[in-house]
Length: 541
Image 1 (cartoon, rainbow, N blue to C red):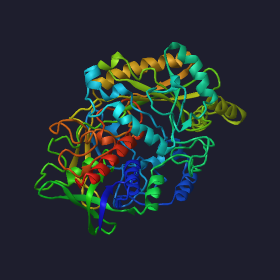
Image 2: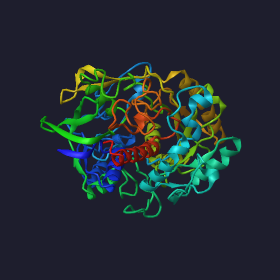
Image 3: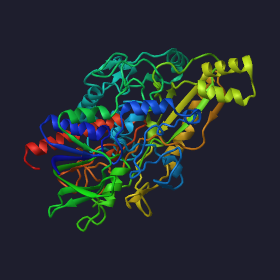
Image 4: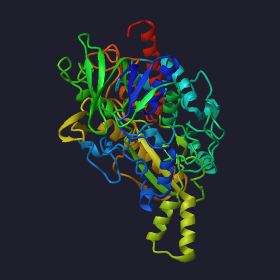
């Protein structure tokens, strides 16, 4: 098989690139390690899911996984990804290996980085600077928002950041009562509540219906109002792109000029196949892409493809977070509308970032009825007393999801296991992870802020987690930079070592900020697509 462009990975980044390339007249083949299943099957599996799995946020169980391409599932847990280090458990990611990628079960939060997030080293003396500026990526943020149908505030006072060249495609999804009431109580004290930009709208957007507030965006929107990567897969296929599922890439061939010439993959029967091409894109995600690059080491590239810098698999980051819950002293009724609606961003930036991590606090809008029921039952209540207590706790319950900002650290590293193998006999990923003192110091600041917020809401039964949790925002393993000696890709996500290889997505990101990564990943993907097309136009491919 042969195509102008070979894309490995069918998530939002790979799918958008494939669609862009097909629009420009290039032939494209996409490889996906996981299964392809119809959307309706996922919805039915969610309806049939047990109370226990719902209660404990099993966002993966309704997505069947290929026996040949395991994923790091929570229920039941498995050891596909080996976790080590002081905070190894904080890196227990919950990504999917299916056609369409992990945006099947995301919250559809579409944040931009702040301009200063691109210059952490220059501005605050920590971390690294990007190889591009916010202004260079900003047009691609706009394009990504249009592709995904993002709703966000038109009022600059509610935007984070406010530096925009175009308005959001749709105005913000209106605040619910809880969002407005919390803002009234906490904003006068320096806490800034803003609407979360979202890949959904209250009006139809393209083929998607308007959001009607089902409130189970995770693990799947039951009516298809939310954006996910499968939509761009289908758009790409309509333009002639070929998608191969259960195709586990494991080797890349290189020629005498270190150009990539082919990708080898195993099918479901462990038969090997080869796809040749002119340009190659690895958009598998921030774990699977560096794993593949390391697996594909060859005589010319003994440390792995694109790894002359020894940075492939290093600098692994995620928004290691904490959670807090409490009962407000008045009914707020979180749980109406999208699962995430508003966020506290007052501590997103400031001079303190030279010393410790920023944070953002999502006011989770997931219905509190299920945890309220569990808590009320634990009190031994029955009858009318039980019913009243469930209502009180559901009405007054507050759930804060706090994201913290890690710095890139070469010691936080993904390697390929020499002992644990996947069903194809390929080494599984091992990851060493330590959040570092920058995050630990920022955690204390966040805890102090949580206590203040709870106090402003008359909070009781305040519980703050002590262990960091993962947020599935995987960054850093193919880090961007100007210097090929200490980075893997340039500002176009083009590999320094290989003139026809692009590695777009979260792996390229040199700073984490505190916001969800998907919009930045999509913007980088669209920028990479322009770079690939320009290379074709200049006959460099």
